[in-house]
Image (cartoon, rainbow, N blue to C red; front, side):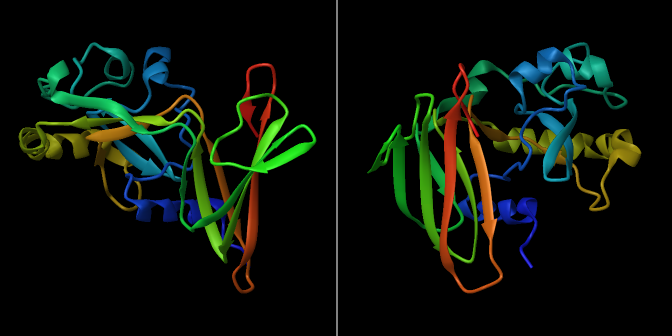
Length: 222
């Protein structure tokens, strides 16, 4: 029996780019200000159904954004974070493919023509097909690449987390999942567009084709 897509997608963790989010879109009930920025360094939250749900941010003031909307723990003391404390740079180049299995072929289709290419489609009506020889696979494609944000004073921040974690767990209360874990973000990859795909077969390893197409007036993947 084929495995669930979200379970297969967890395999991308083996590529060592952090914890892959099967549903990376932010909760629509969160403040607009937060949703525009997305997951940020200092976010404290829980991992639920293969997605990160933020509770508060330990680097922002209690009156700012998500903290003002959802509240903060008792005796809250924000970690003093300066602009220089975060490294931010392009990490994944445009057209990057992160897969749990080796991609053996990439074919680009534009109209009636089809060519093997390392590039990703950007025009409406074009598509790209990935071929893999694998029994199970998961894939994340980044047409525009992605930037990576990383916290630099990690040891100082770790001491901050250790000092206040007890209050954080009390604040989380019944929002803690059965695992009992809280997660604190110290780095993340961000992009404006992405595509996710998984495939599974109960038989021996076979060729798997995953196709992404550009659609709409404002090109999107489907």
